[in-house]
Length: 247
Image (tube, rainbow, N blue to C red; front, side):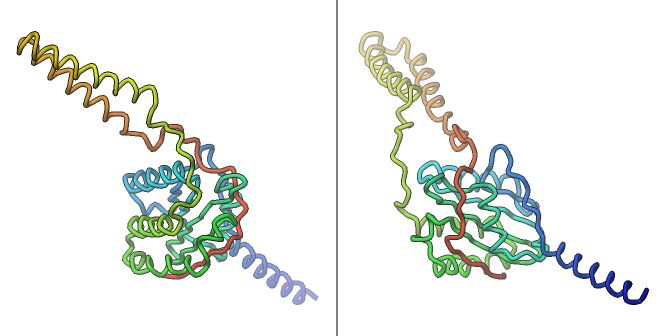
């Protein structure tokens, strides 16, 4: 009897350990969701910043949200299922549009999965998804993760060209821009006045004002990608197709 109980316990332990092996815990969504989530530490801070800037800018123009989780190990989980569940849990994509995309990389398993929200399905088919994966596989083989993500997202941009394009809210013509334009006009008149009325007496003053104006006009672009960025999330509804592959 003891042998039978022992055998049952061994089977149960083995069964439970296999169950646990196939469970990957998707972390809770941060308060502010940025596009790139590098849990494996394969990207530098500069590379993450560049990709975030690119994907945030893209989401502002098109409303399409692309999340890139990079993990060390799938822990036996199916990459397609995990990517879809991640997109659902973090509600990637805009509400009612469901235009979210998740690009999941597992470094140890050497697997990639691209999963699309239902709103993306009409434009990025399973065939096109596999085409993107096939194109970036050689880059991933060389451990060039930044280049692979950059190239893959660029392919997505091309496929989704002119899709989900937001109406321009003309943020370009903000009060600050209006001020800089008025100041430019003022400086032109000032130049005219100084040149014809005061000759060269105040030429150096004009130069100073012109340079200052130029510097201020360009300074605003330093962190433009992060202005008014509240983070991804609000949509979800994944299951619109996708694909995966090894590298």
